Amino acid sequence: MVISAMGIHAKVMKVLALRQLALSIVAVISAGLWTSLQAATVEGMRLWAAPDHARLVFDLSGATSADVFSLDDPARLVIDLENSQLEADPDSLSLEDSAISALRTGTREGNGLRVVLELNREVEPRHFTLTPNDQYGHRLVVDLEYPGESAVENPIDPIEAMIREQEIQAQRAGVQVRAGSDQQATEPTSRSSEQAKPHPRRDIIIAVDAGHGGEDPGAIGPSGTREKDVVLDISQRLANIINATEGFKAVLIRDGDYYLGLRQRTQLAREQKADFFVSIHADAFTSPRPQGSSVYALSQRGATSETAQWLADSENRSDLIGGVDGNLSLRDKDQVLRGVLLDLTMTATLNDSLSIGGQVLDQLGRVNRLHKSRVEQAGFMVLKSPDIPSLLIETGFISNPEEERRLRDPVHQQGVAEAIFGGLKSHFERYPPPASLLAWQRDNQRRPGGDEYRIQSGDTLSAIAVRHGVPVNQLKQANDLNGDVIRVGQVLRIPSS
Image 1 (cartoon, rainbow, N blue to C red):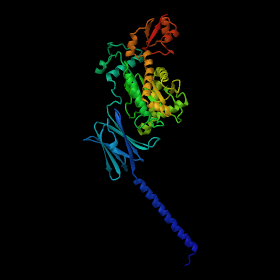
Image 2 (image 1 turned 90 degrees about the vertical axis):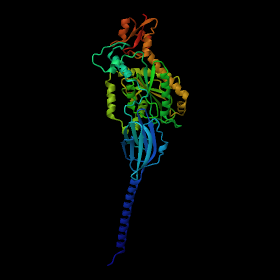
Image 3 (image 1 turned 90 degrees about the horizontal axis):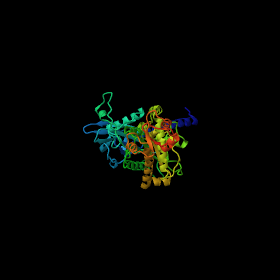
Image 4 (image 1 turned 135 degrees about the horizontal axis):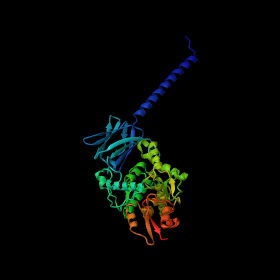
């Protein structure tokens, strides 16, 4: 049998091709097995302790799955990470002020990692994974919620909160709340309700919110200064100034290095019956040239400039860093927006915000350059509280090297805090909330050369002017009014005719 050279060559080539294919298949299978056997490394562990929760974050080299469950006697939380190994040093993790009294690690089933948290209090755990973003890689987040605890240090007593709720309801109904009055309830009330009488000379509550926190550092300056650190310093200084002033009380929304959701911040302010909410931030831009302070109030129709809109979006994206599963709930956003549109107090709240913002901007201009000479309006999530006047203050551009240096300076931080409070105090001295100490002082310090009138439900500025026989413009001038907006409970000075 004769086989041609060409036929032999073809057979050899076919054998070589099959061998190459087999080697390729083996290589693919080997690579797959190697990938499946390759462990995700825990490169770092970070813990943030808040008054009402603790957040433990595992920084991972790749994606992995985790199983989290509780054990009793003693109380423990077990975190099992599949196909993972530990490279971080757990002993370097500070457990102070958290529910974790000790942390142990070990190998599980050959290629898994087990982390055991020994607990010193009751917790409600939840966990989720996050994909890489501009700041971090893959992460496993384990939250330990403390049932029944408040995120605010020294929360207002429930009876005092009920008193404030009565005041708010009375304002909306146009009813003047009088100190010491004995009102008979038309329906049976609880014992706590019976004890809750109108509270005279109360403090004006200012909710001070330091932006960002925890795993969300905010903007980072050229020298590495983190926004979350400088705004917490300024917020704590502002709270100290407020608490040192008679008739005022500060509620720090965040008093440490931990994260709070944007909606939770306004909810905490509402729970504390805050009269005003101020969120402290530091601005940033892609260029180091922009500088100066800015003041923002809410705009119902969106931002007043493209810059303000971009900034609003970047701040709102903080929830993508700290939120559950890294997603914003559109349904919840619709509810917030719907509440804003339906609440009849929004117009008065926004007018108050703009009025206070103007006062704050004027004071800030005395300690720092202003980036904008007027109060800007944007759709910041933390400003979407329909019943609490709110401002977001950008204290300066941390992306500007000179302002970054100043934002780290304690003297400058104190000056910024004093300027912010100076604007707030100026407003509330003119328009003190009913039943507050400032309102009581104003009612008991009658000015010479005229009488005073407390606004009732249904009053208008023009009707008050006609009733007292004075021109509207003269009435506005005597009370430093820029427009026709007045509030129930507000006291007007009636100039002599």
